[in-house]
Amino acid sequence: MDRSARLINPILIVSCIIITVSFAVRASFGVFQIPIAEEFGWLRSDFSLAIAIQNLAWGIGQPIFGAISEKIGDRKAIFLGALLYAGGMVLSAWSTTPLEHQIYAWAVGFGIAGTGFGVILAVVARASSDDNRSMSLALITAAGSVGQVIGAPTAEWLLTFLPWQQVFIVFAVAILALVLTLPMLRAPEPASKAELQESMGQILSRAFRDPSYTLIFLGFFSCGYQLSFITAHFPAFVTEMCGPILPGGVLHSMGITTTSALGAVAISLVGLANIAGTLTAGWAGKHFPKKYLLAGIYTARTVIGAAFILLPITPLSVILFSVAMGSLWLATVPLTSGLVAHLYGLRYMGTLYGIIFLSHQLGGFLGVWLGGRMYDLYGDYTMVWWIGVGVGAFSAIVHLPIRENRAPVPA
Image (cartoon, rainbow, N blue to C red):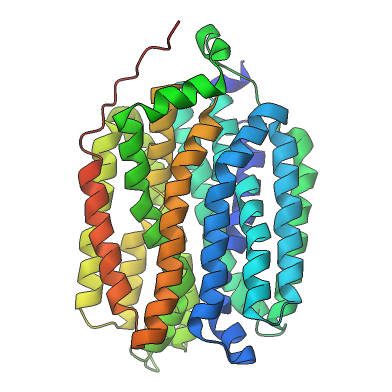
């Protein structure tokens, strides 16, 4: 049987492993907010800016690594990304000033780009049949959620007996180990004759002139804002603003006795719920217009975010919010990447999706940095949270005019 005709194949398995480890480390940085700030006496915005720069570098690096993979090969691009990722983690472990963390965050961010969705989704898309592509992209996205499930609690657990510097080293070793899987990652190049003859410049020009591509770019901004803000700040948010965990309750009996522990668990719950949500999105993307599904996801995020901040913040509301938001967390990724592949083909999907992802990371930069800045100015996250609600509503609207019919490739 042709490999691309099977949903589960070696390329999908290896890609899931790479995404899981890459996202486990990436999702853990919010856990280090308080330990690093307390050790050096920094403002909350100091380390937040490093995480924000990491998100910005990830966004800038995504189309670059997409182009690298399409020019010199996927495995070489991922290998370079792993080296940058691990190197940035090691250098950050020895950093003692905010500026050092912020400089090395560029290496970490570019490393995430090389081992993240932009490159991996393109590999899996090319290795999948038309019938399986939507679900294959959803499985890769769900693997990122698995990383989120294990990343923050693993960091929290390691911090109980290791200083944060050594935890960074442990994570760097895990990233480097990914290169051992690369020999099994060899994707075919399924593309039509017309797509193979179309140059990167031609496809980029065609996409940039298409209003639908612009709308997808603008709509992905809020996704990055919301996800990055929550990943970076929600553990600290829960630690400081959630009501106490009462003895004798379910959480207390499970060993979750502090709001700090609840903050780490909340990130895991987001990732766990997202596994189901992403797979559902992958199935739905095969049967329904993707633009309407995306508009619905952003609308639901807007309602959930507004309800959470308006109601009292208790352990129960934190859990309910984490599960609800988690079910929508990365559900946008297989739909957005699948929409790009549908509209513009597979040949330069890595570059085209990478440019769309830059918008996501610009939002991520703003969400993370603004979260730290607003906290330092006002002592809470209320204002930055409401901005996230607003941009979510904006994204719900801009997806509606997208034309989902694929334009023919020029002769």
